[in-house]
Image (cartoon, rainbow, N blue to C red; front, side, top):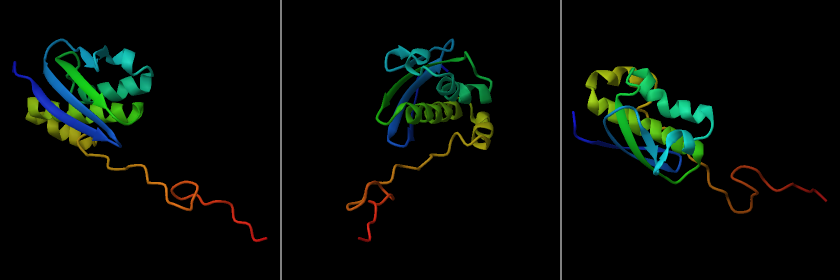
Length: 129
């Protein structure tokens, strides 16, 4: 498997475009190492989670372009894109990844702010007099 696997992952408003090929475990995000891009250990674990689930740590090189959203949404979008790429690389990994819910698109988005209100659900303080 020398060809490049191209997949996409989304979470909130973040989009991750991933190019994966066989290699020695390098994960490059927007031209930087993923440990430099995602500074907290929790986010680094989320990025590695798909590889650890199917025991493929250090077998693939990943080049990812992340866009939109915040840092946690980007990490989860990247995890989904990597999981999809692993399914294409090896079809048997699909059941393990699906059981962990990594192939399901988390569609929860921020609710829009409504006019005449402070936020989406919060109202301005009511004054009777």
